Image (tube, rainbow, N blue to C red; front, side, top):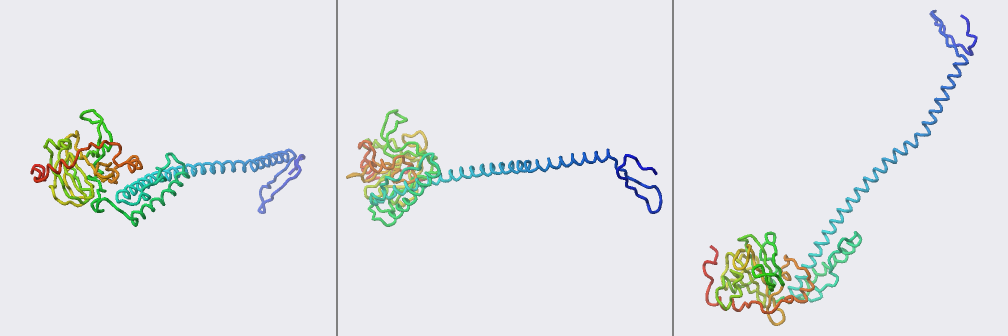
Length: 348
């Protein structure tokens, strides 16, 4: 077999058993092609090796940024949740401090226990640091009030079991539609003094004694010299002692009689629509020794479940600026003396 004149190398393979001889001839042209292909492959490999770290870094960076963004969103959501919880906690803590101050005032604790220049409400729209500072300042105040109530000398106007501290109706079923102070009468359109609070409640809702007491009036008023009470329909008046009295009006049923002793939370009647009221309701009034007489005060001062706007103003003037020409209870007790309420107002 002849050899190609242009060949540089020739590789032959002779089978041991005979047969066709195989050969590979490498020419100059073939060698150039191989070298060009090898150089191209080398350049391609070098390009891939050079670009690959950048691609990996970009891919990893993208995953890292997305993970950081997700974590940041989760942290923001957690921060918002914690801020909302702190705001609710601050509101409850402030309400508890105000209730404790009212309790201290009602039981006759020393003024230092219920006067508080630092009992400001939680800061509105505060950042987390401001809220944390407020909570840290008010928390110990609640402990101080607890200690004052537990150990400080007290001089309540009446025995502790008789203090009218509990609400006269279940506040989950009632709402204050007319509060202590000045209001416009829905019947006359005139501005008039409201010496108690009107609580709208379902017809027949049980009315409860807010403290131990003795019934001094139960029934309705028809006598002319006590007609200032007729607007309240069926009435019950409880004497808790020490100049503390409570009045309940608009009752549907009267469940007690004059001279009867009642305990705290004992039913004395039901909410109704007697007298001047457009909806089933309860008129509730608290009379307290102020100065030398027993006069109407804001029931929210001692009824801890009722809302109160400016506690310090109420401490300074429990009867507010209302006139002193309020209806006299002596008229009721003189009317009731010597007779019992009609059976129409006793429970059936």
